Image (cartoon, rainbow, N blue to C red; front, side, top):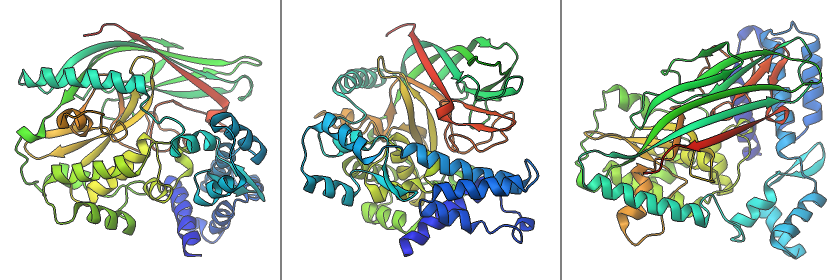
Length: 478
């Protein structure tokens, strides 16, 4: 019962954080009702409840928007857990071959095969079979052999170059990016306007420079300030009957690798009165929180240690050993990602990073989010990492999911603890920021921004209603 209540309060708080809690709503609607329905997997009841409330409320009123958010959450949970038992059994046979019923029951009870009871029927996460193959050692994680070898060679070269010069940033590469977002035909009525936000590179980070906007279609656009947490290009287009709606963005930029050998640097005590310390050691609810589990785990890992780098190393090693990479649920249906990671002992790049950030910040180590895309040839994908602040040195990149490399050289093995490769596209330097212009409805991805966001006057367009494609032209190779 206690665990159930914790989950319920997490979902309840998550929705209210996004849309606010107005005192004039309290006498009218008991918002714990749909939260409890979500907790119990009664998604059809949530949708019916939300539809009824929306039909009896003014369109776009606070009550209407909150009801719509619950309806959205129910739909999103159903999409992530869309696989039937018969289908997941087929997927397992294709991935790992024959298995016993005893193994099947073990996988279910331990959560290795992730599922939920929704509308009275057990459904499975759409990546449950592939995740089980990874977690049982019968499949690969994020770093496949080819990428692992590529990164090892590249980072060794980066380290060699930083050792022979006074700069920590080297190995510049140039990229031209074509980003296309295509909305399915007739998901928006003909004649209505579609609003779209596409990702665009940040320019305030030293590792990323010479950002140039080369082409935008349609041509009328708004580029957000580089000070925005999520940098974007905003576009509008009128829907045409029986036709897909396409938004296109083309840009170029240069990227540099960075490596800081912290064993050669003097880390000073933090200035606890500074903005950096206060801002980047605080909680950022709900995803960066100092829960009892986070505090106990961080203290058990770091003990009485006060040196920031040693604490960072200890946390990094613990996550690398104990939290394997696995395909993730959509972040928008996880009200507390670090707690999910600790409970399920798995997580993708952003989930591992949020766990690291929660523990580091709790221990008084400033750390900030950074994300966008990894652009390693043939491995282009969404990716999240972070930066750690060391007094007297500055911000130093850290990639939790790229982890420890396979090398007997300790510095090369720990490269991603204080370095990052040149194959990155930085779009975000925080989570849960505002868009410019502001987005009206619940975002498809409430915390990060890499794939784009789309809406119209009738509501948000979720990931199942459109697709995206990022193409990379590698201009040079150093």
